[in-house]
Image 1 (cartoon, helix red, strand yellow):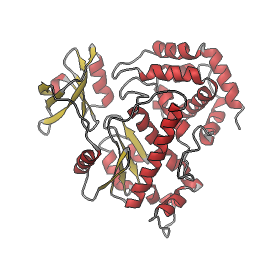
Image 2: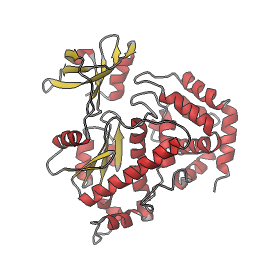
Image 3: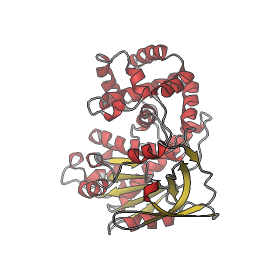
Image 4: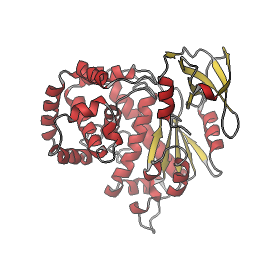
Length: 380
């Protein structure tokens, strides 16, 4: 099966048009194991007939012309699945033993304890409220998610690994991830991670779960879940469009800005914008060997994030840059974020265009870099 990037590249090689998506398309695709029928709205059409289709569950399908057997359109309005219907669909795709827990914005499908699913739902809802309040207080308008936000929680790493291998090559090594194509998070029950608890410890009640995951040893694990949940919220509230060319420094930097867990407050999320000490320490260590063109390389493409030898430094720098811009250049950062939010799917900018977007918002790259490093060095 070809990767999302390869399929996207095949469509992008042709002229694209953004479809008005007024009705519903019923499409039959050619697959090795037999025809696949999908229904939804067409978001993008390539000159050669390739399509980007969004289903009522919020999943995206990149369709190449060679795979398209039949397409029938109608004027029936596109209607996203409601929470109960979406929960039923997700459960039908999972092995036996899963159940669903619903909150105001989330459908949490799980085969671990109900208490843990409820704990996840509570954390997600507090994060959602904090995220949307953060932007609304700064007069940045977000939209309500069109689809319920789905999280699939596995009882242990073996089951999680079996699921993730079908979706992402290296996801089994992580504790959770957000999939841009399916619009779902997949997570493992952190209370079952051996290094976080001794064999005698129980984690049955919400209080016990919170106590266990509030420990320093669990901080990075919980931060991973919060990080991925932030991605999901951002891509569902209009801050970014899935499969658009959103620079990784921006999307990852924002997720790291929010990722510091806040498990002590049941009513809010007080740690937004707190200094991320893990990322700060890494960035300080990197400064001694940071090349002169580091900021340009971070912005103009995403290669540093995809290189295992460079990724850790890239993530640290993305957090530091985001922290600096949010704290010191908010109006410019908001304008830049609006520029990114307006980008449509499957259209990739050149390195020069990425730099131009950045400099139009923030000014000369060299001057910004000097101020950025100077301000971050003052943090304690």
